[in-house]
Length: 259
Length: 150
Image 1 (cartoon, one colour):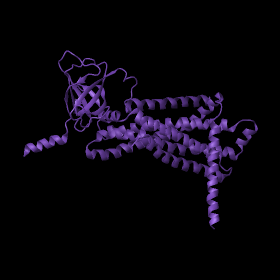
Image 2 (cartoon, rainbow over the protein chains, first blue to last red):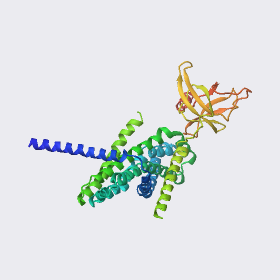
Image 3 (tube, rainbow over the protein chains, first blue to last red):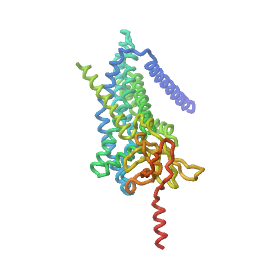
Image 4 (cartoon, each protein chain N blue to C red):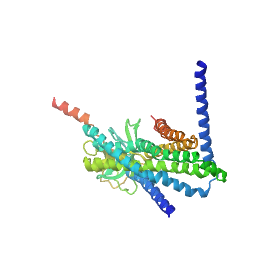
């Protein structure tokens, strides 16, 4: 009985280690290679697939979140009569936390799962194997462009998210609730520092982009070539990405914003 | 044809996100390049800086001419030493000018207002504004008012 339990734990450990090894091997073989100029159109295609097609969901969510932040912040701040700090609050929260985190979560759901499903299906229908047969390296043709596309795109989407959110916040606060627009913008400008806040938010979203696209590629490439395997892989992509984003967010915040 | 459309859209996407970065830099965080190069520093000592913070604005007649670079406690004079960063295009501040800490609006942020003096001699980099007026602390005012009442 005890032996069985121990064996199960041991097997779990083996599986985890070997899957980590496979993930690292996939990443290193996608990254460590001679740059190939023929890949640039492929990367542009991926920026379109992963980035341009995600703009709509990013803009809609950014707008809604910025508006609700302004609304919630206003009801609290107006009680102490300091609604002029509303712009600062909305901008800081969006630029440092919600912009990078929520756009990464949306990116994992919208683009990450699509990448996993695409590669998993390529594997299940043996397209990857047949590419290898005709002498085309699937890592450089399929994996690497998706990696670079996702890596480039997420920080840009997070920037858009923050900007749209701040704009929506100003719409709600200034145009609807009647906060004085001068103090809304000038308190924000005074309190937000480019290197202290904006850059740190961008660094966060760069890390998230790396992690999300890596998980998506690995889950697709490593999926079992069955319909259950594929569904499990897409689920894993969204679940693992979301958990990693939130956990990493805590540690990145701890590291970058000294207490 | 398909690839042309994709490339154009990607180009628009990249430009849009650059614009967003620019918006965050200029409009949200007030970041501007090369501004610190053509600026000079002035010092002044205050009894009480109240809620003045680094990067608060410095203004003459309400027009912004610079910002607060540093606030520290000076052990020798036993009060607060404030370093002001003034735009070099504003070169003729008389040496007997007064620096006072005022509040923007009733509960707004603190800023430094410089009221000009009459001296011919002007301040240049590294000089000190000797005549200062400290921040008004609301609690102290209320305290004084209460004492006068009784």
